[in-house]
Length: 153
Ligand SMILES: [Zn+2]
Image 1 (cartoon, protein in one colour):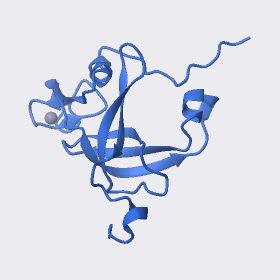
Image 2 (cartoon, protein in one colour):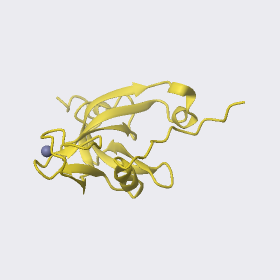
Image 3 (cartoon, rainbow, N blue to C red):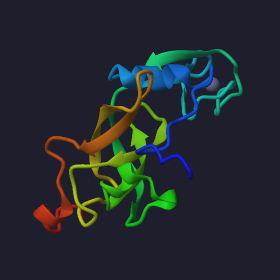
Image 4 (cartoon, rainbow, N blue to C red):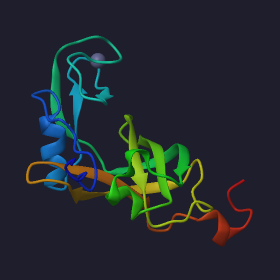
């Protein structure tokens, strides 16, 4: 007999990623910012993606951004029950207003309403005692395409 799956897979926290997950548990979007060139980096890594500097400081980023790309999952890999309960799941690449691009689930709109360029706002979901995950929802005042017709030209 095998152990039941957890609701969702949990991230493996390392010394390099722990600040991101712990800040998200506290409702903050904390990313590495390069002290040499000012670039926000994501995923956490030992060097800046823009200039290679190792002088990175954990810095709170604004929790707002724009959908760069999206996909809709209508089935669940490995049958995690927590994902199955949320189908269809909208996964996006979000361009934060501070410049980093991250993966994130968008809730609060339908697969028909998600679109490139949609303004989104992060919120945070606790996933364990020491980790949270940023998720996104349409920002207040963001126009959903199904409600606004051709206004997104
Ligand atoms: Zn840099």
